[in-house]
Image 1 (tube, rainbow, N blue to C red):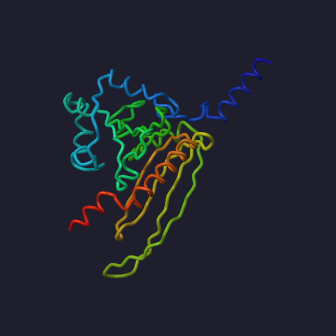
Image 2: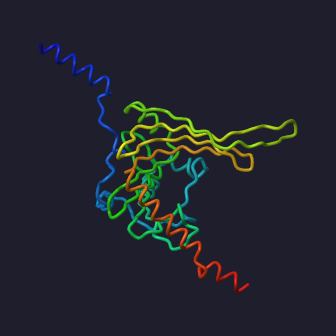
Length: 246
């Protein structure tokens, strides 16, 4: 009887991959309190406001590659990588989608973090009313593969617009495509996407991993969208006033 029970448990474990549903990345779990940021500060992470000019990071750039290759051998580089940036609330409609437009939302970016021996660069943590509701990580194929090994998933392909481009020899038709790998889709939405799009006939590729509270994420999106529309339609907005002076 005991052997039958053990065999049943092993079979059940195998069918479910012996894993609970994903609810975050490493120690960062959807629903946790914003005090996690203070915990990181106590572990040696420096805090600074994000400067979209000075602190912008370009994956694959020479400086980015130097940082990745050198940080484990250079204490100075590693220390500079241990930074938490905060994107402050903006009242400029042009910052929509980049900086928070609503005061209850706080956006932090961890410049570098290691989870299960996977180096993660630029992990974004979005909080609403001091509750973590969304985690976003870009350009990390190793993390994506690790999640696929750990959790059950389904793949969906979404086709986008088609574009006609020309070279010296012929006309070429390109089509936008997004491969979405879904790990969870209930109250928490966890997925990675690989997107291929085109701008001026140049191919653009994006790899993104996201874990969020579906309800809060949609709610915050709608709130910010309304603020964006109100700011854009404001006849007294600063950029319009500047144009009147020309």
